[in-house]
Image 1 (cartoon, rainbow, N blue to C red):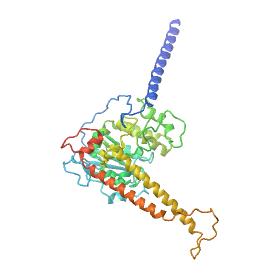
Image 2: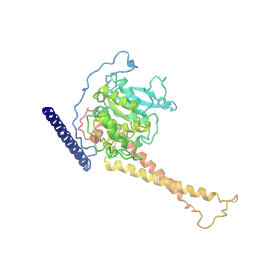
Image 3: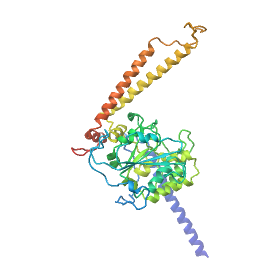
Image 4: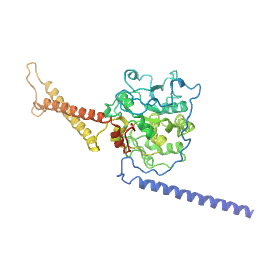
Length: 428
């Protein structure tokens, strides 16, 4: 009996020691992360701490399409000839097979896809989230575009093209790229498949705001009305990535539109993507919030990075062929845009004053019934002055944009913007 008590006491003591050691090591890791997340990043826009070296699972390998896969006959996993794309988009290298993966609702009209040039060698996979009778649809309309994206990856894991492009259903949106006129079609057409092949994962949005460089803080579990997903991030991370410590910061440009290479997708086993989808199916988090959670997790899934904020100028140049000479000339374009916007705002205010005055004008054109100081009289000649200024700024902006597009046809310039070596014949 004494020996048994002694054994129990030893067992309890050993368990307590183990727990203390585990807590100490975990606390130290969190402390280091908290400190390192506060260190200013001054050596480059994309240079952030990567604390864990994750083992690469399921390294890419040639995989043949399986017989009976949906639309398998429409796919070719081999890169095609080395001729140019022929759409005004410079490539200089081989053609790459591409899939456009799009999530839509029944009421959303995507007929715009039939009237635009998306570039060659692209197949369209349009999922209708709320129509179980549609040829392509997810198992459940939940989590916004996330359910569709994961369903596509799971269903076509063995039959992927060189590049898969994941996009929303609208052509024009504020979260598209302004230098491409906020046009999703232009983004898809001009996207550099070569950059996607080199990087593995590319966020389709170049602009940092919102999302970079410091956005979601999983440690803050208090509700933030501007970032409702933030308070759920720590618990979600623990369920999705049980083997990874929770990072201090999660950041990338919004808004869940990106391109991924076949090899990069296959670095993660299909079962893991099923695990992510199963979490989404059983989660009781509000639909919109569960979708927003993944908005800042795709870079973790595909790039194994908690913070993914590439140079905006490089994204435009190497990613889309819109190349400004320097960061200064890139910033100058947005400075001119701001000046035009301020002139447009002032013009709207002038027109509001003029309309207010007109309400007091009688049929003979005379102003009656206005007390001194009741209304502001618009400055004579100001309207024409502002309209002329807006026209000049707009012309200057378009001139600089077109010059950047022409400059982007040079593969050497694109390589320089990305900081990579280039020699004749390298293409893009």
